[in-house]
Image 1 (cartoon, rainbow, N blue to C red):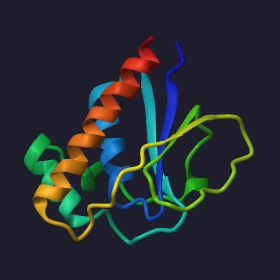
Image 2: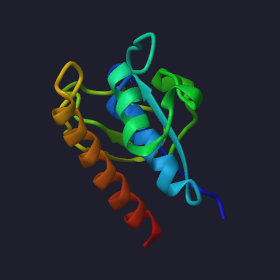
Image 3: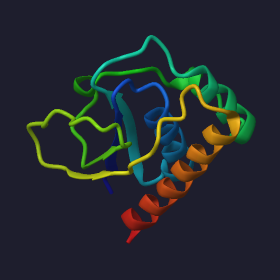
Image 4: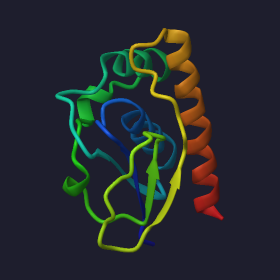
Amino acid sequence: MEKTKVAFLCVHNSCRSQIAECLMRKYGSDIVDVYSAGTLLKDSINSDAIRLMKSIYNIDMSIEQSPKLIFDIPSVDYIITMGCNVSCPVLDYDYISEDWGLDDPSGKSDYEFKKVIDEIDFKVKDLIDRLKN
């Protein structure tokens, strides 16, 4: 059976979309091929995201992940935008989309950052459940 392809999109592909990609890979790699990308790039993944994901999940995102542009990933079945308050480019293929409306935790306290990570964790697990049914 072919896996569903899911992409998480955010402007810079440096924080929320990277966290979502990491957690989707952790929980759903048996049913999903997962990607993250952005419309503009930062040079690296947010250092607080790397630190907290390593602390909470013992996963080092900097090993397998890096910021990518939306046109650097393959066509996908689902596009999940993270709540960037910008419109993503329209892609020239059919896909299902939804927006998760998450606040950007960059530059905020660890407490605020962890709240966003917890929200992403919940939403990723919910998406996996929906994809299985």
